[in-house]
Image (cartoon, rainbow, N blue to C red):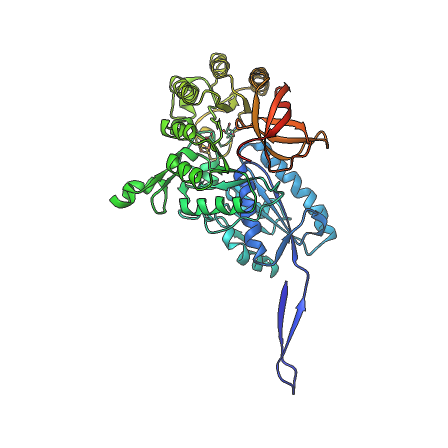
Length: 481
Ligand code: SAH
Ligand code: F3S
């Protein structure tokens, strides 16, 4: 960073002296959802303008930021352990400052500074544009906190710095916050009310990514199907918008169409879909654009109607089945994945069996499964007793996981013998001689490298599989290459 110092030397004219220091080094670590990883790229972009370069080496950092997750207690414990490590480094590097970003920052606010003496700065997910001011505060030896949640902030005007990027796939956020108030979930408290980003800024970011050589984007939001742009403002205020704004509003299928048409060579994914907000319109749009991938992450959390009700998930088991049937009818080879919670308060053995039977019906391609973790401040924490013993929660979770493994294998086996388009993301973790990529369904495919390159679309004949990976060999470039 260039620092200009005005120095008045007696008897001589004002001398402007330019001292060139090396850039300050930012080390940033992210936990939790994809949105957090995407936010860290926005933070890196904001701080690049302040003269910070990113580093992967903790020991040389001037500023350490940790982008935190509050979704389960374990996620918070992990962050606290990392803070102990940062503390040890800080002892040998006193100029190093430590800031906490994200959901834990929002949940604990200034209390964090009390609980973790090592922390200099606490910044909630909507306050990243204030980072330059907050850093000035801590540079002056004060502590700094900004956890104000916003009705507008979508960071739509910031071009993220792609961190740890493979140069092929990228996240693009489209909505922030969530209005759903699932009773177990801390997100509406830590990320605020739902608002959508201007579709033109989304298309612009996707186009810039394409120009830089990226081949796949994942549109991100807590609840993407609820996307609604009517000129800015909270989703809940849509009713108050003018007639013209309402008539020209863009919903999620409209956005998908805009992005798919703007960049027909770009693969498009999205996450997460809440079943209660997913419409036929979206499924039909997916099927009519070849570049929108055949994959839906469709968390259900439980297969029992009474648990779904207690969770404030606003659909029934029957309605979920209807949605699955519609997806399969419109996109027969669509992959579907789940999130499940085992041991929600009051969950009976019967309820748990309903979850297993729902899984048998859907036979998900993969899933993310958790034991219920009570989160302070949520409706479930306030109104319901966390009454399922640890052993029962864990046993039910194990049953869910083992059934999922069986279904994952059932699904990967269905790819055997087929030739599928794969986008190469990089070298396989297990073998230097193999590429790793994904098919449209988001399943990992591994195959010998031959002369192909990262970022190529290739047709791969699938010859073998595990429950998580397809193994094959490339037979040529696909027509999209
Ligand atoms: N917006 C997404 C989920 C966001 S949180 C949706 O529509 O479902 C990601 C996942 O974490 C959730 O789907 C849920 O399975 C899990 N999760 C959230 N809160 C939890 C809690 N208190 N205990 C255990 N798992 C939880
Ligand atoms: Fe959480 Fe439910 Fe929203 S799981 S993020 S409150 S859709």
